[in-house]
Length: 166
Figure 1 (spheres, rainbow, N blue to C red):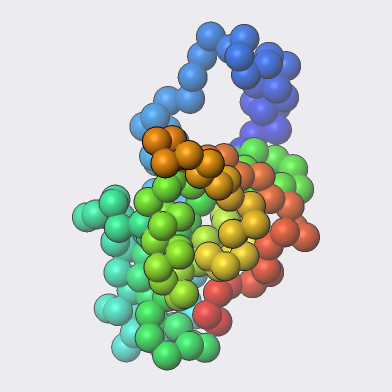
Figure 2: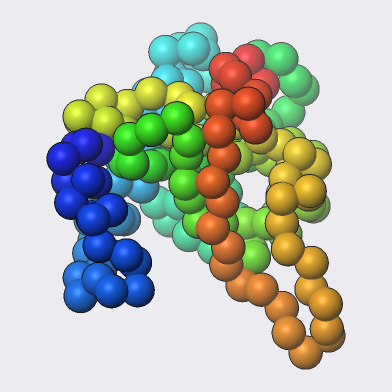
């Protein structure tokens, strides 16, 4: 989330870089973003609902979402896939797996929540539901070839503001 660090990284084209992001660091940034969202939910929900917030990815990273939570707007639970970016700027870059994508298609209450971490501070960037992602994601053109992971880059005009289900 430090502008100077990203300026250094951007000075070298991706293919020419001899360094790769540390996987543990990426996992820590992701976990911190999830914890930020859990804290936000606890601030937004009545105390008696706090035990209904399930930080799923702590025990099951294959569920296709990170957090299950009650909603103040909808009946039932919302499923939240959290993506955290430390890159400064007016957009948010993230990776989404095929499993996360498939989960979004099967669950109308699934949401992609984008979080920015800059200078050590977290902020909600915006969110999308699975139906809104359809136009962005690649199509499998042949039965023997399927995408497994993709990179998205969305700006403020591409996402809904606020928080889903609240």
